[in-house]
Length: 282
Ligand SMILES: [Ca+2]
Image (cartoon, rainbow, N blue to C red; front, side, top):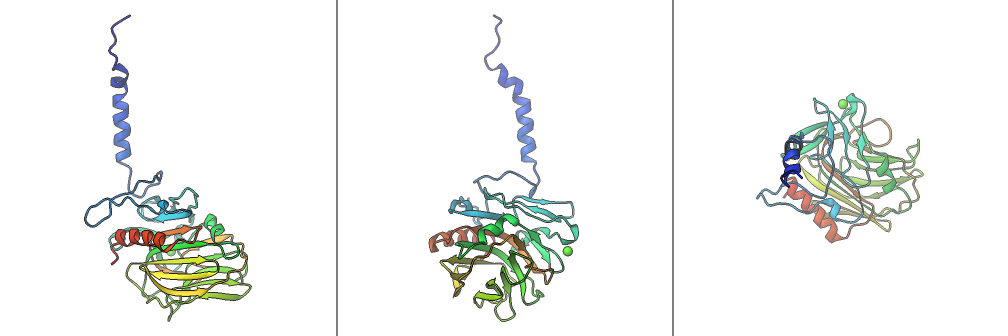
């Protein structure tokens, strides 16, 4: 036998391995990429935030503007990839109605900007989480609304058929800026709250448990009511609008997280702290 060094195979493949490592490190921010449980640094003090929304049970949708955003050269977003294992990606095929990705769109952090004219994204898979009779769920948003957002505009909407009678939505009114509505057979079941109309970044959480709905802003309860949602088979889930074509929401979403479970106060608090730290919200 010839005297071949034992480490020869490693030496042979070392250039290939180095090339792969260099290529991976050059991936553009926001490009389509695989998701893991790891997270990036976003603490102002430079400490590493190990928590992610996936650490709480039942995450069915995790859209974050700093990961999984598929966009063109002008920043128009064709897909906002779901970071949960559910694969509920939000998409938009028409350039005119695509939101735009901004690197520092929400308190210095990436966000998707919806223009208030016609921008929206659709996410069919997420609709199933909100369907049914009093489905337990928790929806959490990191966002800022534009001052010129019209009243009665939907931030998030869903519907089960071609009528306005069976729908689910989160919308803004003049006097009650964020409001949860499950509208069944033409009858609205509201959770009323009085969140100030807010143009600065804030975190909103909606928790539905046994027909009782709660709304929190930056961790403080601002709304409580009986939703008593009847059976609604929702097939559509929109970001930036509700059923129909107008009006459209104007503002920026940094993050949209949906759980198919009613989070406990402790669980909700963990997600809120993660969002508040990430988006520099006091
Ligand atoms: Ca547009």
